[in-house]
Amino acid sequence: MRHIISPTDLTVSELGELLELAEEIIEDPTKYSDVCRGKKLATLFYEPSTRTRLSFEAAMLNLGGSVLGFSSADSSSAAKGESVADTIRVVSCYADICAMRHPKEGAPYVASIYSEIPVINAGDGGHNHPTQTFTDLLTIKNLKGRLNNLTVGFCGDLKFGRTVHSLINALSRYDNINIILISPEELTIPSYLRTGVLEANNIPYEEVRKLEPVIDKLDVLYMTRVQKERFFNEEDYIRLKDTYILDTKKMALAREDMLVLHPLPRVNEISVEVDEDPRAVYFKQAQYGVYVRMALIMKLLEIK
Image 1 (tube, helix red, strand yellow):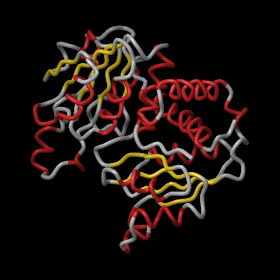
Image 2 (tube, one colour):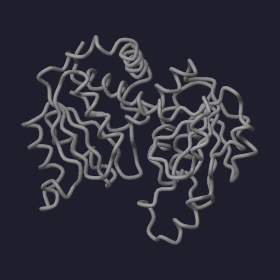
Image 3 (cartoon, helix red, strand yellow):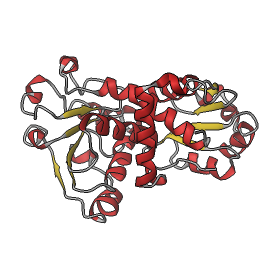
């Protein structure tokens, strides 16, 4: 039995196999429509979610399985004070696999220690979001044809953005990756990523404050929202929330084959006028999230 708590819990080879399976599912989803019949996925979401929760549920239903769970801590026994450890012990009696989102970093890891079923981290605080990372990698691989020889720009909230942290971790294992970090001073990446991942793996990177001077260098632009729920006071959030807005003027400076990714939800950091640009692939990215989660459920349940 395996758990997925971090994007690096899979080796590069295993991740390659996962993405290959996801691409096979894209080509012929009906081939896999009954492989999880009789299996149950528990979705334990202690924090609000639309795409991640629904894509997990869609993935299991597409595989012929069923879903049970809760969509907020208030509707679970956590409201009564039940621990994560006790919850997962009980859920292990009901389901075959579990996806957990929690506002506290490390909560899915704690669950994995006590679980009798595979646990998938569906986002823990500002720490990790491995299945979003697998989604991002599938999007890049499928549309770019490679996961090496890339210059990737991360723009917006790089301090609290768990999707950014996860993807940087994952990309660090591929050859000839260059990273450009675009954020205000207050929202730069945590030092553990800078020193423990980028510098430790000799990955070239630069940190800048403006998007326009570097956008023409990018193969992939990963936009993020400034997350109100991660701030301790509203004044800082209001001051920083509109720092970067991607519009058609900025897109005109970019390469013709640059991809724009976003984990969503979008607030106003990407103008709706950009949606019509063929380089804007964030809604296709959301669809890929279903396919990669289908592949991951199959892998963890050891279904051929």
